[in-house]
Image (spheres, rainbow, N blue to C red):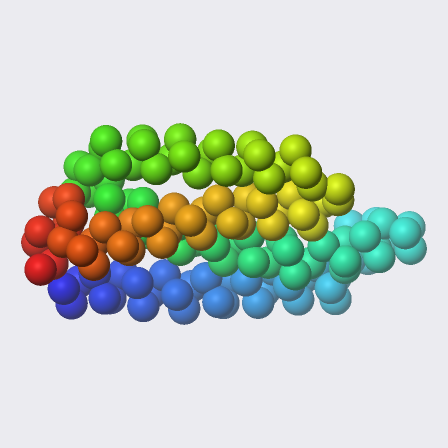
Length: 131
C-alpha cells in the first residue's frame, strides 16, 4: 500500500510540476514558437488544454505502469478500447484544438478512474494485494 501511495504521490507532484512548466512555456514563451501574433494567440489560447492533457498523461502513465506490472492485461485492453471509443465519439464533435485536447484528456481521466475503482474494490491482482 505504501508503495502505491508513493507512486501516486510522486506522479501527482510530477504532473503538477510538468503541467505548470508547460503552461508557463506556452503562455510566456509563445514567441519562441512563432513571430506571428495570430499563432502566438492561438498557442496561448490552447495552453490550458495542453497543460491538462500533459498532467493527465503523466498520471495515466503511472497507473498504467502499475497495471502492467500486475499483469492485468485483459482489464487494460478492455478499458483501453472503451476509452478509445469514447475519444472517437467526442473527437467527431470537436470544433477546435482545445476541444480535441479535452477529448484526449477525458479519455485518459476515464481510464484513471476505472483503474482506481478496480484497485479500490479489490479487483485484479493489484487490488487483491492492496486489500
